Length: 83
Image 1: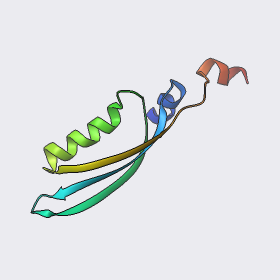
Image 2: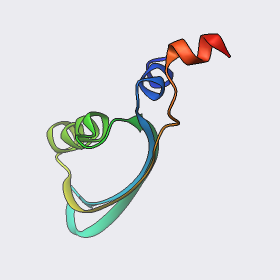
Image 3: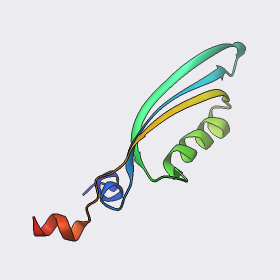
């Protein structure tokens, strides 16, 4: 099982994000990044790890972030095995 699937079973949800960042070499231009992952509300650790990576490794300055989260279905691994 993948980590995303396990996270989904433990109550994570699908999060779709779009972030606008200023380009490191030209602070007047914006670049858009879009992605999807399974993350856990309300702290969203995967989203924060992605944003931290952008700030530290790419030196990105974030302009804005839009996110939409679809809650996971109410099931557990035990319920899945019994179906």
